[in-house]
Image (cartoon, rainbow, N blue to C red):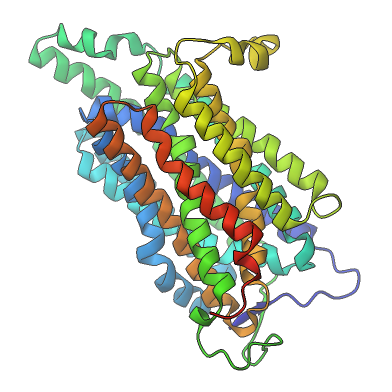
Length: 439
């Protein structure tokens, strides 16, 4: 079924944008908390790099497992009720963090993360096509960029909050400090650190329940669903897999989410390896550059940049910054002194700056791929949206690939090479892949 927003003359879309924007803030807050959780759980559960990155796997694999079931649920119970259900599932996931923190049992943390990802799946499946269809397709990247600003704004704030609330006094939890303790003292100190999560997740649960009530009783319009609408040129295509621009778009989103998560969620782990004091807040650096990238999208698309041109630039910058991460200096702080010195922000190694700059390169990929992939899908739009959401699985698998090479080679810096072929595919999709209409 195609989701069609019947846009009447002068119809105000501000209220739906505000409500969906609130949900995108929640997406960002919950999603980008993982970047701080990874080094935290590495200490609490005594993990290596590969094991710690199972955080991203448990969270993002939910999008693969649950995307199609959640899209069927959405068609059955409706758009608004589906969002309420998604928020309820997320509240359950937040509650599960409480016993996980009290026991320091890593498996329970992973179950809680999978549950949060499941709730986000239905919210993402509903909200992204809504934003695409609410206005002209050529300006869809502009609207998604606004949502991205809200999403990454939350991603900028949450590591700072997590660091201030949870990661204080971390000098007590360095490997050297813990090694100097007896087994009993070490277990007690780690338990104290783990229990710091309990109160924040109680508040998160309450906030999600309040948001459920807000959405349930809000005047958010239910989109009209038309069974028989078929876009021009789709009459001969009987399966969603008959659209190359969509299938290649799913692959593009798969590799994009993979590199986005690597840039946002491994930066704290990489900073921890380099003994950076504020490693828990480093995800904020990546998110800050993503916000800058979204501002470019909001101001330049479609007036100065087409969606495909924005995607081309993103891929090129991504490859250049990846090379900077791989071959930049881990000792020099000159680049961060130039970029951040005037702000009074603590300097970090140049390689971390290049890793954060990937946030700028990544910002416009998601907003550009969605409208390019959904163009001309007609009645297949809803199923196509679920497939695109499944592309988020890249965030589950590609960070593990990075973690494997980082752990097995002992060189977490050069292991970032795994991002280069990902950006190469995005570049192919930007120039040619989105134009292909027949296999």
